[in-house]
Amino acid sequence: TRAGAVVSGAASAHASQRYEIFRQAAQQAGGLYNLTVPKKPVFVRWLRDPRSQQGEAVTDAVITVLLFCVLYLLASMFLAILSHWSTAIVASKRPLLDAPPEIPQQTPVQQTM
Image (cartoon, rainbow, N blue to C red; front, side, top):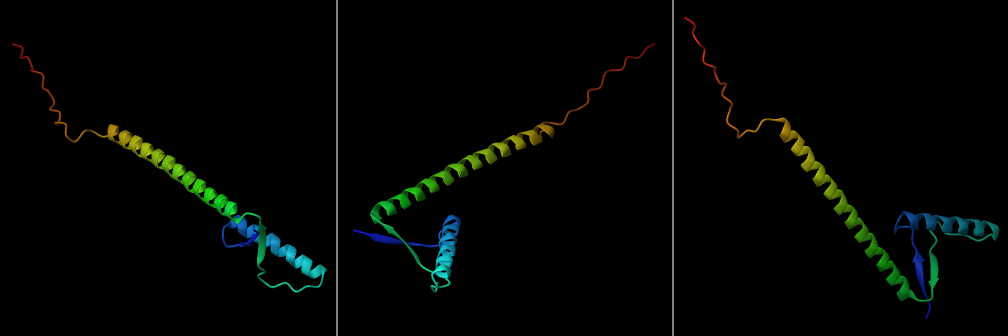
């Protein structure tokens, strides 16, 4: 069996760049062979096994999501450590609020006679 997949420029920045290259090639071929090319041509990529192509796309999507989750976890841990560390520094620079106020001790004055 054979199947085709439409090459779309709306999927991602890479797909948009790839679609633009195909569009420019179609314009050049149209000019060379005196063919009319629509403003937004539809490009089809022929596939031998569409299920394997779909499986690869799903695998790529899962890997991308997992990668973003790991990056988010690392960024969150970094910000949590930074927040904890900066709070500890600020707390060490100010006196404790729960500590009793220090009462200055008076030294007894000896009277000389």
